[in-house]
Image (cartoon, rainbow, N blue to C red; front, side, top):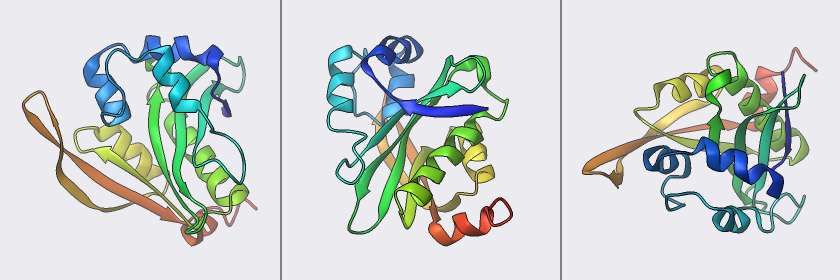
Length: 180
């Protein structure tokens, strides 16, 4: 269904076009980027990424496996090699492929990289509590809710709370024991 490819300079325009308003950018980036998203900010975002054993982040374009078109974006960041942990961040799915299983496919693909290639022990993520479709995707992908960070982000006169989720390597092995 999908394949993860290294997010490169040639992918900047597509992501900038997708992230077309301030609220979407804030939700996608957690406030890391200012609106509008720019090539310069994306240049900073991918610097020193995708180097096995030394990078603290792996940033991917999600491509349709059949026609190669970009359908999303996902990253695995905040890697602690000492603690064998990381965080799924900046998950985005193009409107044209929503509700077709692509979200689960891309989350499972990055989990597979984290647990099987990078030998991580724990992978976590945070999702704003109003993003019910993403929450359902993550739960269907096998991530478990750990708790809620209440009122973690102030945006346009409203507090956003974040649901924390994670998966451990034993959970991954159990989930995939019949696929080995």
